[in-house]
Image (cartoon, rainbow, N blue to C red; front, side, top):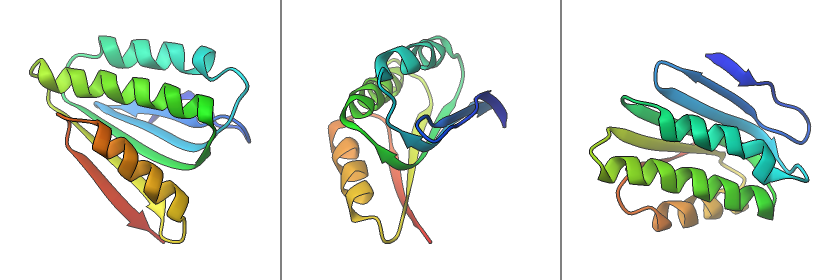
Length: 119
C-alpha cells in the first residue's frame, strides 16, 4: 500500500494501492472535516474499481459524520455504474464498533458492505 497519510494516536492511517483504499487506526481529531476533505476528493475523483477497507479501533462523532460522507460518495459511485465495495473489519470483542459498522451498512443502499470480525 502507498501511505497517503501516516497514522498517529488521534488520526487514522490512510493508504491506497491498485484501487484499494484503507483507513485504519483511531479517528478522533478536533477538525475531522479538514482532515477528511482531501480524502473525500480523492475518492470522488478516482476512476476504476474501488474497494474501501475500514479497520478502526475508535472514532468520535465528528469523524463518524465524515466517514459517512465518504461512504455515501462510494455508494453514489455504485449508482453511476462504478464497481465498488466496502469491507469493515472490527475486533471480535468490540461490540460498539460492530454496532457502528452495522449502522453504517444499513444506511448504504447500493454498495455491497462486508463486515468482518477479527481476533
